[in-house]
Image 1 (tube, chains in turn purple, cyan):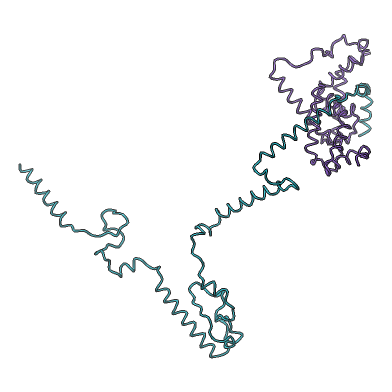
Image 2 (spheres, chains in turn yellow, green):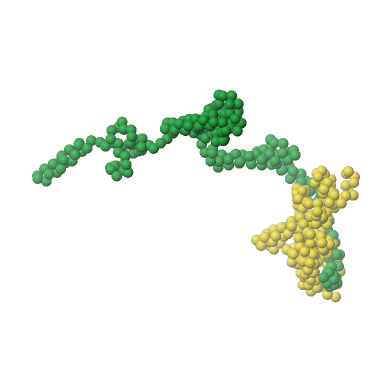
Length: 193
Length: 237
C-alpha cells in the first residue's frame, strides 16, 4: 500500500489519512503542497519567515483537524482556504503590532515605486524588478491581492478561487481585474518605455 | 460576460506576464523536520493533558471516554432534576409509610375471588373476599356490583353488600380523626374551665397560641381601689 501512495490523488490520500490514520499519506500531502503554499503566502504577506511559519501552522491544523475535510470538496481548495485565513490573521496581527510600535517595521531597503530613478535601464536586474513587483503587490488592497496572486501567480482556476474565497465567480473576476488595475497603476514606471 | 473578462485580460497583459514571471519560492529544507518536531511536541502536550483529566482512568479506545463522560453527566443531571422538580418526592422517600400489606395482597389476589374489581375500589371501600365457591355468582355479575343481575338471589346479595359497605363507610367517617375542631371543642367541655371561643372581640392581649383562660380579676380590682385611695390621701396632704 505504501508504495502506491504516491500514485494516489490528493483526495484519496486524505481519505487514507482520515480512515487509517496513515501518517505517510499526510507526509505525502505536505510534500505536495509545502512549496505552492509557501509561495502563495510569501506573495501575500511579503515575508519569507512569516510565510514559512504560516504554512507550518496550516499543516499542523490540517493534521489536527483532518476530519473537518469533507470529501465533496477539493483538497487543494481546502488547504488553500486554511492557509489564506491564517495569512490574513497574520496580516491583521502585524497591522495591530505596527500600530502600537514606534518603528513602522518596513524594510529599509525597499524601493519607492514612484522614484524616477527606477527607469527600465536600471531594472535590467530581474532581482530588483521582482522586489518592486512584490512591493507593489503588498500595496494592493488585501481583498484584491489574494485573488490576483491565486490567479496570476498560483495559476488557480476561477472556480477554485471562488471555492477558496467563498465568493461567486463574477465577484472573483471583477476583484482580479480591480487588483490588476491597481497593480498596473503602481508599476507604471516599470512599463514606461 | 466571460468575453469581457478575456478582453480585460488583454488589457492587463503586461501585469499578468510580470506576475507569472515571478520566481516561485520553495519551502526551506528543514520544513518537514520542524513540522514533525512541532507535531510531536503537540502530541506530547495532548497526552499530558489527557492524563491530568478526571476521567483518565476510562479507556480511550473506540471513543468510550467521549461517550461515557457526557452520558454520566446527563444521567446525574436527570436524577438531580427529577429529585428537585418532581412534586411527589417532596417528602423524604425514606420516611414515607410503607404500603399496607392488605392492599397489596388485595391487588395480587385473583380477580374471580373478589366481589368488586380492584379498579373500582376507593380508599373508603371495604372489600371482602368471597368465601363462596366461584360458581355461586353468575358470569355476568362477577366482579361488578353495578352490573345487572339476573338472579334475584344475586340482587339481594348485592343489596346487602352495598348496605354493609355504606354502614362501614359511615363508621369510618365517624371514627376518622379529621373533623370540625370548633364543633368538637364546643361539644366537649374543656378541662381548663371556661374557654373563650369566637371572633376574638373579647380577648385582651395576645398571650401566645394557648387557649385563653379567664383569670380572677378581684385582686386587680382591689389593687386599683387601693391605688385610688392612696392618690386621694396624697392630694389631701
